[in-house]
Image 1: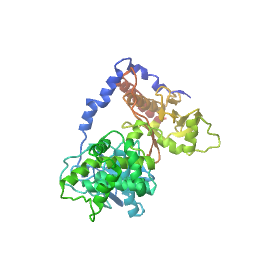
Image 2 (image 1 turned 45 degrees about the vertical axis):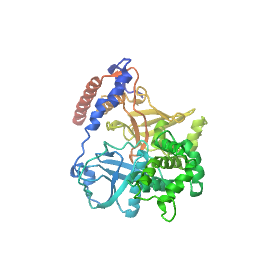
Image 3 (image 1 turned 180 degrees about the vertical axis):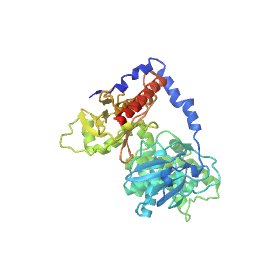
Image 4 (image 1 turned 90 degrees about the vertical axis):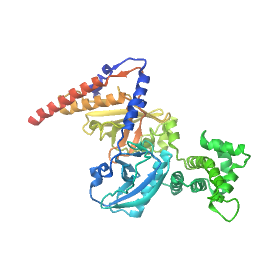
Length: 476
C-alpha cells in the first residue's frame, strides 16, 4: 500500500505565516465561536425529540433541575453497558435522562440513571436534583412555566467520563451531586461532610482534614480556611465537625444551627466552599476518581480508553520500556476514527485492529477498513499521556484504481484534513457501542494559514468523480 494521494495536496492549501497561531486562536475562541454559542436555539419539547425517541416502547425518564449547562439537542451516550438518552432543555419543559426498559428491572434502571447523573455532575463540578421520574409508552414532557435563567450548551463533552462501579465511590459521588444541587446551605454542608464520612471514615476525618487543608488548591476553599484561621479558629477540623456537621444534624445540644438566625446561615455560607473542597479532595485522593480539572491538566483523557483495553499491567510495562511479550492477548474493539463535531466520515468508520507494536515506551497502532482499502495509524505515548497522530503520515490506502470507492475516500480524507487543520479534535470511539476510547486536543498547526475554499474545491471535485464513477459501475 502507498500513502493515499488524498493528502498529498494538503500543503498546497496552506501558506506560511508567522501569525498563524494567533489567527487560529481567534477563530476558535473569538467572535465566530461566540456567535455560534449565542445562536444555540432552545426548542419546544415537541420539536426537540428525535425520531428515535418518538418510537413507541417502554421508557423511564428522570426529569432534573441542574446547574450544569444542559444540551439543547438530543444526545445518545453509552456508559457501562447501558444506553442513555439526554433529553434536551426546552422552552416549555425540564430536561432529563431517559432509558428504554427492554425487559430490565425498572427500579434498577432508575438507580442507574441517577448514578449516571452523579458521574456527569462530578465531571462538570455542578449539582443536579431529581424532580420526578416519569415514562411509559412514550416520552412525555415535565412542564414548566418559564425558561428564564437557562444555562445551555450544544452537547455534553464526554472526553472524560470515569467508570464508577464500587458502592462507596458511587455513594460519594451521589452525595457530592446532592450537595452541589441543593439550595439549602445547611443541608448542602451536611451532604459534603457525609462525603468525608464515606471517603475518609468517621474516626479519621479530623486527623485527615488537619493535613488536607494544606493540599487544597488555591480558590474559594483555601480562602475560606484562611479566614477561619484569621478569625482565631485554629482547629479547623474540630470546628467543621462541631459547629457544622453536629450543629446541623442535632438540636439537643449546643452549638445549634438555627434556621431563623441569619448569622448562622451567613457563617455556613462562607464555610461551605471549604467543606466542598475537602469533599472533592477526599474523593480524588482516597477513591482515585480524578476531577475533570486534573484530567485536563495532565491530559489523562487522551488515552484513558486504551489504558482500559490494554490493562494496567501492560500499560505499566510500556511506561517502563519493558517488553510486553508475545503471549499477551488483547481484546481490541472495532473503532470509528472521527473529528469532534464534524463528519461523520464514513470512510473512517468500522476500522479493525491490525497491528499493536511496542516501541520502547510507546505503542504504534494501526486500524484498517474491512475491505483493506484504507488504513490509519497513530501512536499511544503513555509516558506523556498523549495520542500522537501525524496528518501527513497517518492515512494509507490503495492507489487510484478508477473506482468510485477510491474517489469517495479521497473526498472524505481531504475534508477530514480540512477540518483537522481548522483546530480539529480527533475522537476514537468503539464502533459498536459508541463509547469514547480516546481523544486528542484541538490541532493547532504552527506557521500555517489554512485556505478552506481550496480544500472545498478539491472535495467537491472528488465527490463529483465518485458520483460519475458510481453511474459507470452501475451501468456495467
